[in-house]
Length: 160
Image (cartoon, rainbow, N blue to C red; front, side):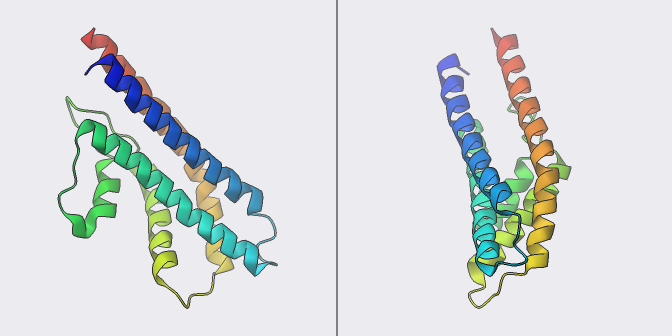
């Protein structure tokens, strides 16, 4: 893989990490007082929807660059998530641990519910659980991403 291509990949990758960070900041800014304000709970629900979408966009950046195409479109979201936990020898390291992926799957499931339940009232208790999971996710995901980038860079250095 050429250095220029890898630089483009890392630019897109880092840009998407920045987007994920912005959504996490919005969630953290709005998490206080949701039990008293339905509008705030709805805003948080929307941001959790956005968080999963931003994470999935990161997966797409990785999959597109390393040509890890998903063929089965019926289970696309979960297959893409699972693919990111795989180390593909000679292609790329795993983007995230299975433990981190379990947390992302919680966000995926919520996003699905949020998008398809039109008469659904936001469950504040569920939002509190998602906020707790976000705290776990944040540290794990940042560690996973650093390890991923380190391994990609190390493999590139070996090729030189």
